[in-house]
Amino acid sequence: MPSRPFLRACLVAVGFITTLCAPALRAANPIITDVFTADPAAIVHGDTVYLYTGHDEAKPNQGYTMHDWLCYSSKDMKTWTPHGALLAVKDFAWAKSDAYAAHVVEKDGKFYWYVSIEHDSTKPGKALGVAVADSPTGPFKDARGSALVTADMTPKGKHAWEDIDPAVFIDGDGVAWLFWGNVHCYYAKLKPNMIELDGPIVEISGLDGFTEAPWIHKHRDTYYLSYASGFPEKISYATAPSIQGPWTSRGLLSEGAFNSNTIHQAVIEFKGQWYFIYHNGAIQHPNVGGSYRRSVCIDYLYHEQDGRIRRIVQTTEGLDLPPRP
Image (cartoon, rainbow, N blue to C red; front, side, top):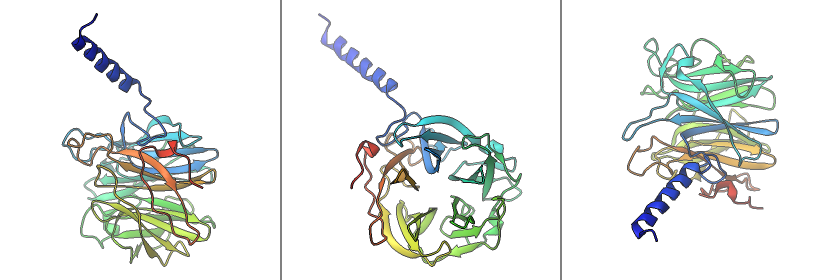
């Protein structure tokens, strides 16, 4: 009979092999476990959801280290197909680092990928760029050859990273609006070509505790602006009768993310169900990586009859749980 130490060693080995063979994509949270993913954005195209994420590559005790953006797709929100890194900092000749939060939208058969990125020394600070493709999985290329928004265009702020976290909303009349910001929340109308601003940059005032990560969605006749607030971040939201406001703060939508100082959200409707997509720090070691190795999660989102949104419940089961009535 094998000795007890031998049996224990075998059990440990089997457990390790089982962990290695566990699926990297799943319905439970986090939904991606083979790499670190952050700052999710998602779109619905036909019968498929395309999820675009940042890619955390920080080593232990290293700050934000992000070189490219990843893409996944699903037809049921539970089974995800990875498409790899479809866009990277090096695809923008004028940029030098930091593949921060990004957002993809479709218009007139083309897909536009708006990114937060560090500009080179010709225009120091964070900037917004845009890439374009004929397919949601690319190939994407820089649509302008230059930044869409640079730090010198938004002098209100006193820091060099206020031009981050783009989010584009295309209204029912076909007009596209770009939202972004850190500490100050900005928006501007986009030209029909989707790669130029069409008018002034406007600051949105009165958003309680705005930090970053704006996201716009519409339900019935109400516009919703959700955003990261405070620090460590939580998610708050505001509502408006028009895409240009006025915005009324409605309080918290979600508590902060587990084991992460940041939380960044996407809100989509797919096949009649609404979803809240975000990141947390659940699969990083609690003492290694700080808030710089994050993982995307998904839970259900519910609109109330009075126009408010029910407080998000962050779960480990994720979409393994059935939606509520």
